Image 1 (cartoon, rainbow, N blue to C red):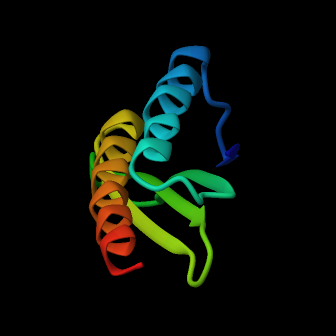
Image 2 (cartoon, rainbow, N blue to C red):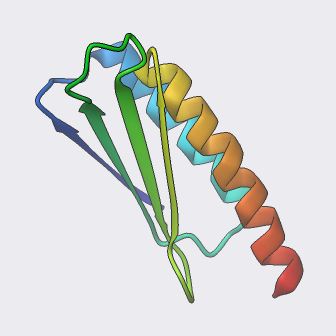
Length: 96
């Protein structure tokens, strides 16, 4: 699986990149037909402290899986995205 990270308006630091790699690579164990994973990191322009958005797009046969979460940190947003994507992948595998 190819992992692409795009950050809008920021530069991801090394611990964040390794966190992304570690979390996303585990998705392969739930569904082995993932071609590509795109991750978009963005700081929302609002006064809230929960303004870090992570969007996860998994390229799988059929319809792509898209999950978008916002929280106080990119790590937390990404963790929520991966958890939701995991559930969707398991459901997709059961239906196949």
